[in-house]
Length: 356
Image (cartoon, rainbow, N blue to C red; front, side, top):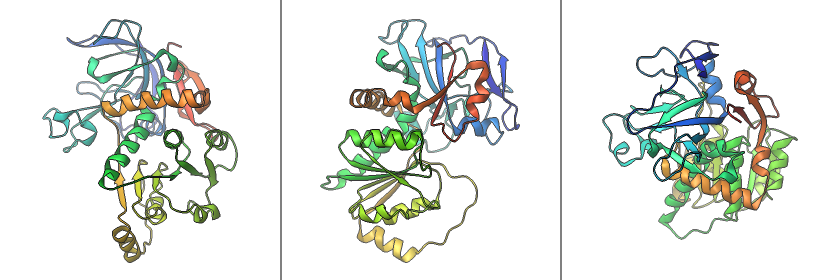
């Protein structure tokens, strides 16, 4: 079969190549891949910045945002059912959390991840998988089912928020999301579904990001030098929730100061580099303590969050028909995957179609 592979750690080694057909192990099923969303992680792996091949192989099939179709029945699903595959797998020990299917909370870092660390991904014609790592996707989401994985990140963020805030009586009304990439937009949509006033903060002054935010009934704020300096921010009143989805680390500390009393900040973006910033630590400490504020980081997602993601996508599609399809700004053929990795300024989510 054909797949997009890299030699991990080697820059610009990505290629469309012939690889052996996958053979299901006992208890596994074969899945035909329909489409895969690509993101910055895939691009960084292609540039050789990280990535790890499975044991015994010298290459890695990349791609982790999958939509596939079962070729045979599995765990109550009939052949032909649409599925999305969970990305992370528990460590072999396993640790306390992995033993409880909370592999997104792995303690010792020995987990593996499809298309990223130690396991082949989904930018291939087929893959095999144990049914426990497959999540059913309704046929109504056939055009955008590859958004389940990025939506699982947003779903986990909201799940964490409401679990943390169960510490008190809480009726959130206002949320700020920094970053209008896929995770930021999907988080904004999920927050709007819960009835919150949502403000999305991003650098683009016009284009599809602005239009998509407006279509949700949310407010778009244009960033000023990556700082929360937009005049409207000071006029929003009490901000209950802030979700950081840019990976620009100084924003994390700005958001801690931006949320109001009893506010919660969730960091979803991964920072690179070695940026330094001056912080008024006494002020920040005072705000955190006297304001009962919380900052929490979140990465990856477990099965519960993937199932929440499917439910969220169904709710978004019912509320704003066609909005999710607008988040997919380009679709490219499998062999032309490189055009998908090299995303343009107007791109939000690019999808590689394998068996469209």
